[in-house]
Image 1 (cartoon, helix red, strand yellow):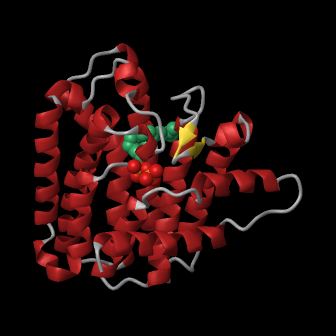
Image 2 (cartoon, protein in one colour):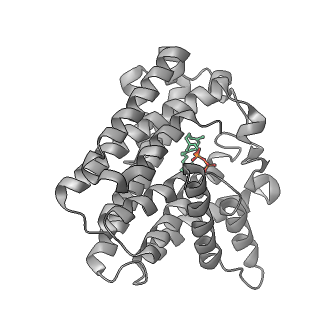
Image 3 (cartoon, helix red, strand yellow):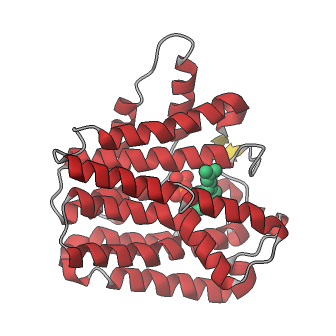
Length: 294
Ligand code: GRG
């Protein structure tokens, strides 16, 4: 199986799980469920679910638990995109090649859909179907809360907004991105280790992979913003430059940023040596993350 096949297979599996977890509602409140489905079941590369599923497979965790955790992280990721696209934040009309949630519905519904995806993610993790051990479920909930909140993604987004009027150096951008994007990638890897009750050394190796992969992902994202094709990406390009934001690319230049992303992807893959062939999908993903066109 090629990486493309594996990505598509994982995307199909997690979409089936999302479809089940986001069952259409009744009555006037059905509109928010429709918007939640619109914001999640609309394509996307499903990189975070891939990390959960193939990380969990290293430790023989149950496929159902892995897919539920994968759906939970994709709900949080989708909520962040819905809210990030709102007029109060990035004010974008296009996401994954389609009108953004607030354009398709309205602003209030998009806010509620994001809120509700965030809370549902925690419900999914906390339910016994995710893992038979309540201790594992509690660890998953704490890890996702830490990754999503002010110490993680939301904190990173706050710094990003602040940076519109302040200059950041490379160390500050690295910190911002480790919080804004890296924290959910880190959770995605951690979830597999938690579900499979991984031994300490194995868990550390996977976390080291997540650390380098998260930064490689963000540098690649910054490169795409400058060099990518808006049609292929399904979203607006040149957003950072338009806002005059400092990014890895504006500080390092395109060539050095590319080299740095590639070096981090190799380094990420190198952390997985102890898992042998079983970690091949995760190694392939590291390369994909820096070579992708969307
Ligand atoms: C609004 C709470 C809140 C947080 C927003 C993550 C984030 C913080 C905003 C998203 C804006 C953005 C474009 C960030 C750069 C990295 C990123 C998350 C890109 C999109 O992720 P992909 O490439 O998207 O995995 P798909 O569509 O494939 O799921």
